[in-house]
Image (cartoon, rainbow, N blue to C red):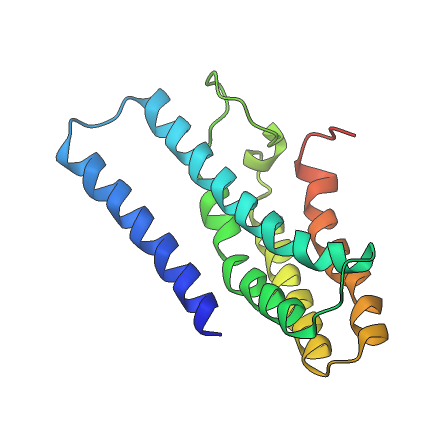
Length: 161
């Protein structure tokens, strides 16, 4: 739990530093603001993917560690509520490399908030299972956690497969 707080604190400090730096300079152009918004949301998704990766590795045969599974799931649950906020800035119409589909900003932010909450719930449920230390039960719970991620990806992310 302490590490989760450290990670969240670091993200907040990074965001605060970026905001302070931005406010100390001239106002960004719309293109710069869109690029910063896309970069921030992509950073969050990279950290989420990092934490899910450790869990998924166990499903693929990496050594089982219930404490790591629980910790990573709690981190995911702590960060997932930021998804709707970081997707709110509309970055369509700018020359920005992104996997976000335009339909995000076509009246679907409420749906994204629902899906983000489902990810929080799935991550917390998975963390509770992992806390029990039972390898079979923990590995059995991975599908629901991954499915909560996929629910949003399937609808709002470019399919790169």
